[in-house]
Image 1 (spheres, rainbow, N blue to C red):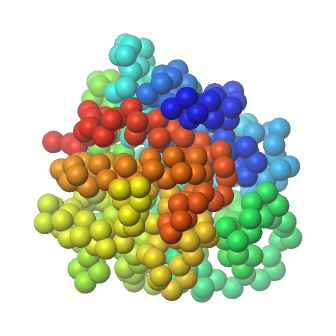
Image 2: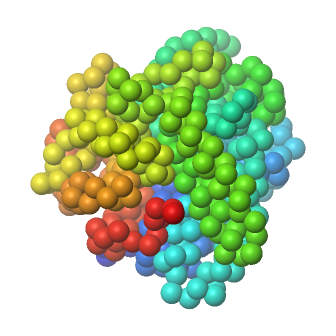
Length: 435
Ligand code: GLC
């Protein structure tokens, strides 16, 4: 616990916390939410400040960008502000500079958690009142810009998923033809082991997609009309379902009407069940919007719908069975690797193609609690804490050896460890099931 707090203190700047020192020297969107969830247990003003700092970068159309840049570190990261050229969009703030895409919408859930952990409820209520209009604008953006037909929302870049090089994106990326790429130089492979990072070929495709969006000045209508990469992602829509429920709760706290968010949550959950559930594989699969095809890929995020209470109890049991087939035993407990062991393209070290990530495991842990699988939840908690004891607050962990990979001072791993230790494995009021 002390180590986790010290790590977070060392990474915190003017309100914001960097995911780690060298590899990611700015503020990231869903990192900020996980960090706030952990900090809420030990440092209420810090947790509030974290989310406030992130929303300083919110666009005029409501989008919460995936990176808010620290001007002092602009040169040390690719792609930095000069590459994104967000000044092409009238919606982007002049300051702080940001990226031009988003990350999973878990922010209302984080704000609710921060509120529920507060000892001074009156002060926390004014924080909620400050955040509700910003969250409503963010969800409004998702509703207006990220839907076509139906209720599910789509992502336009693997980076938006938070699971950058997951096998989930392989088939969509394969149809891209990156030609006339702008010149660029990767910074990540200079500070991290290239064996643990995406390949150059994947990076070309990431850059190609950013280039396509900046060419149309990040206009949603033009991206929707022409992008070769549009996916209904399970994790993204799961987190939006729960965030809508949490935003409805926050609205009611401050006397605003939250019904529309509650209704949207129900509608997304219903469509996830109709369109994303794969009976044969026993898990939820992403839908490629461009091709109109669903694929059931054994990734850890396929089990995330438990977190938002999406499946009915029978289906939840089936999903948990599938999950147990993919989990690995660790420290007398269990953890779920980002991609099924031994599957084609599996790698125990390469980022989202096999290593264990704490944030997704924490979502699974909460999901198991929600459905009353208390023993299994306790085992996942034990597995996560066992990895941290073995290897420290790493970015990710080898599912075969428990060895840490990526950054060695990773903020959300520290923050979620605080949350797990403080939570004590009991079902808590925070992030609780909704009636
Ligand atoms: C990587 C991860 C992403 C995270 C970011 C900053 O890009 O894939 O999920 O938000 O690093 O930590």
